[in-house]
Length: 173
Image (cartoon, rainbow, N blue to C red; front, side, top):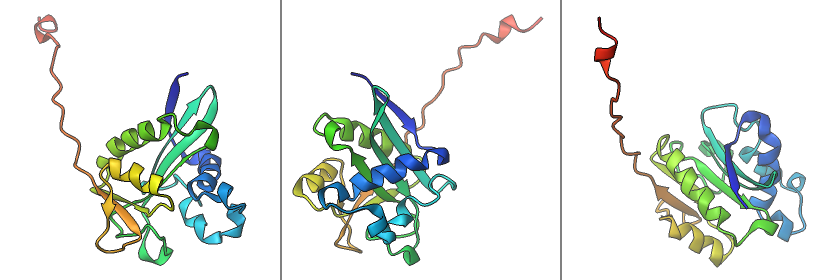
């Protein structure tokens, strides 16, 4: 079964909202997003500014996971907030698609994309040891500014030199 990755666009706000439910593990708590209005900062008006970056993955025309970040400010009171230059990350895989390596592939692609936009990314400390271990595998470390946050410093992407293969002599008279 092949996976198809797509950038999250502002027109796909429903995907972000649906996946936030799983990112916050509300399915395991028998809660709904409406029960927790403080979570709206992670999905309201998603994709309408350059402060948002996200990727979702589909398998056989079904959305099975997503990862997204948003640059927030201190007034948002996000539990994952470190500073305004460091976007806050959310990741979710639907239960039926877990333990298949989808989260790993999503995170790998996301970190490549995010490194072109910022020097770090943060996430609220996961509630499970498995969640912490997953993030540590990618180099996330406890933040010195907030013990409830894991932080990943990102290296800028390496410049790739494009080799010119055009023979200009064919264009000259």
